[in-house]
Length: 472
Image (cartoon, rainbow, N blue to C red; front, side):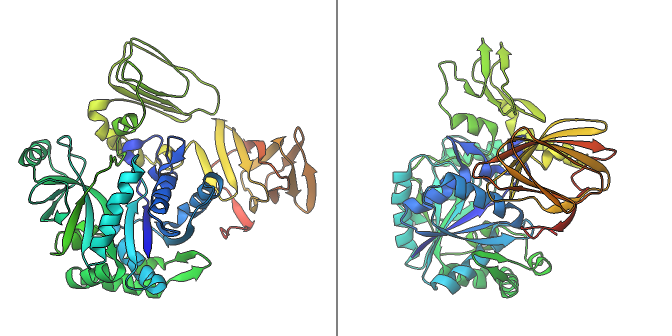
């Protein structure tokens, strides 16, 4: 049995401002589909009817919402929910323990990061079939991508000679500097490390026991304290953080002597920078890639992406080789040649506790979304959507009153003990300190405009009394 293991995490800081901590890179859309959705479908194309997603517990509702709304026939999904970020070695060790218990030691694990772009599904499937054959012989399989440039953003894997056949992986090396990357390219002995793997649960657990016993012991202790409800498994945070923070490459792959490399016959990108995003789209005759309302004059080789709550035009004149990403709350302008340094901006903003590194312009919640449209001293305006049958928590606020206007759909609005059906064009007022709740009782998406008035308008001024999603 082939079980895709989807590793869905990573901040994607070089793709700010589209990628944020609360809405990271796997949820970015390319070609109308999220990268996470594409990873799940990649596993399905290999014949898998089930998949296991390893992700942060904060992303489970966002993931399930994406699966429900975007995928017509998703596989049976189970979730291993991490309480905090760790690394690939503990994630894979926990997944291997889960696979061995559920599917048996011989289950073949296909480890796929959720943030890669692989357009050629047919060639990918052919490579996976070869990797599966190797894995069933007890080998640890990695997928190598033949380098096309001295890329400093990838790790490398050394082999005897770059070619078309599966061969032994000799050494794993980390991201090199430019001069070293050029040397690697010139030798003809190095592949890019794709971060994708294939092995049986038994083989990788045996490799952990031999090469990284401390990782396996910590994973076993964490796994023993798991809590499973339906298709979700949660882990005790105190036990989880005692696991070593180490990658699978360091822990196992560079130490094991039974690692083989399957050369990728498919196009591949880790979509790690804005130029990579640009390259994933079809350019116009001037080499530009425009997403959204863009008007250009004398512009070449430039990527412009407009993400706005309203119709908006971005105009460019006399530009070349730039990245421009315009979101409702942040604007990025960068030269493609130094786009790797966008993460330096994120580090600076984080050090100043700036909200744009954490929350996206449209924030996803288990019940729907909210977006801040306007904020000044004393008031904030939001657009709120609620999915059919879903409801916000029963709550109150210490420092703000709220005005609600329904503009689409039908809501049940509870204020204190009073419940009122409220339709499009109708208004309700929630006084400061009054308990309230909003439920979508219609069959369509509910859309509401909320105006908050008060001395403090932060998201932490919420006291939840009851909540469908266990956030009390």
